[in-house]
Amino acid sequence: MPYPLQGYQYRSTPSIGIAPFTGTESTTVSELLKQADLAMYQAKAAGRNTLRFFDPQMQAVVTARAALETDLRAALAQDEFFLHFQPQLRQSGAIAGVEALLRWKHTQRGMVPPSDFIALAEETGLIVPLGRWVLHHACKLLASWQNDPLRRDLTMAVNVSSSQFRSPSFVDDVARVLAITGAPSGQLKLELTESVLVEDMESTIATMEALRAYGVGFSLDDFGTGYSSLSYLKRMPLDQLKIDQSFVRDVLSDPNDAAIVHTIIGLSRSLGLDVIAEGVETEEQRISLGEAGCDLYQGYLFSKPLPVADLEAFLTQALKG
Image (cartoon, rainbow, N blue to C red; front, side, top):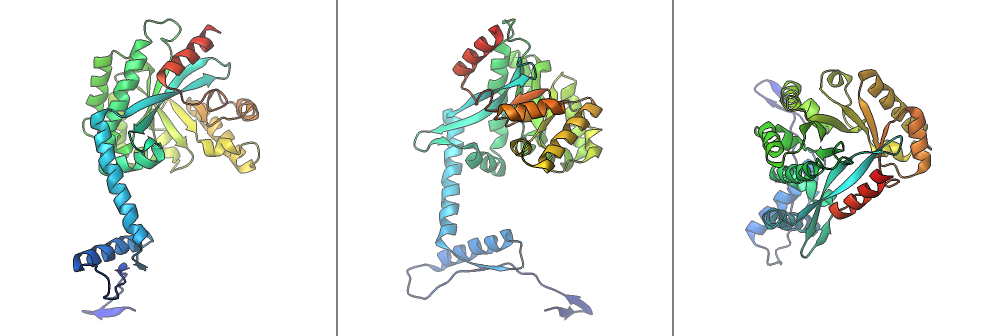
């Protein structure tokens, strides 16, 4: 209910966490307060102005997250990460390049899905050193191809998180990696999400232009799933739009997805941008995308993400053909 305060009507919207306690448990006062605090944050996460009761599962989630964070920090120091690479093909079937994808194999957990640790790395700030590691190793492979006439024109796509992109040292980090590895900057393509572009447009443009001066290109990842403002598309020095796999998956069965795909392809052409579709799994999807004007593809129809040795074998076979 509203309440008066010095002539004004105020409303309070509390988020309340409740820790049930019968007085018979061996729970300490400190533990009870922690439980209530956890429940309060669940109330906030549920939209605020509500209440939540503590559940032991809440503590289990927090404990598991803390353990994963500890392991994530150790993994960076112990070099438990490696890269897989997924080929990107042209309409003709020729290899255009690859996308570098981060993988983590823990000594006890085994393979940890990216969906389990990437978001945590973002939240904890570990994504910045992790992103530097990915960039360095991807550029090392890109540089190694320069003496091979069949590989020297391939591009390397590397995902860049918002936190990494906003780091004051990001431009210098990229320049340093290019200098150390000898990778050709014109064949490095940084994949950005729409959230990066809308946070601070002027700063974003300045960073992109600084990297563009080195010859680095940019692809807009998962296009159509976020803000998709046309105002930033005309201002950003982009090279490519990437059609999200959620639209590709149902392009044959959902008229709305088909319309979105056609719109993205048409928009790309109007702006002079390349367009690539990810998550292509069937020949029927590829044909439909090709008829719509899509010129680049990535997905299980062509190849799953491959470790370096398997990638090199795949490229040798494909490029010789």
